[in-house]
Image (tube, rainbow, N blue to C red; front, side, top):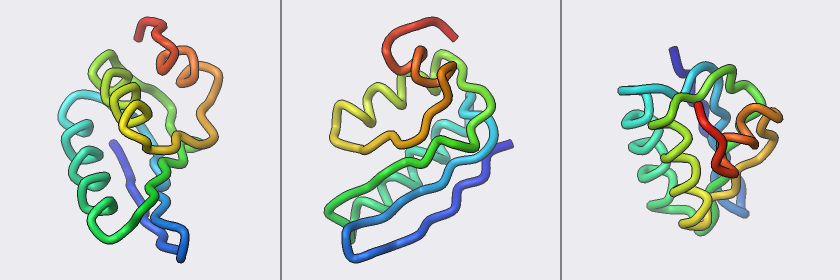
Length: 87
């Protein structure tokens, strides 16, 4: 399961992500990021509630970071995957 909660501010939009970033849920997160980017200059993903990321999810997070998305509050596990570890 993946829960995504958006909160907007004058600085941009933060998407609080909770649960597992895996398989088909990656597409859902990608759509949420695309929607958030429309009106906002800045988008951040608050990853503090993420419990697991598979290889597809890790690839998405690396791409998101490379495109300027701020990845905030990742666990050590998620940080390692973003830096190129294995899921």
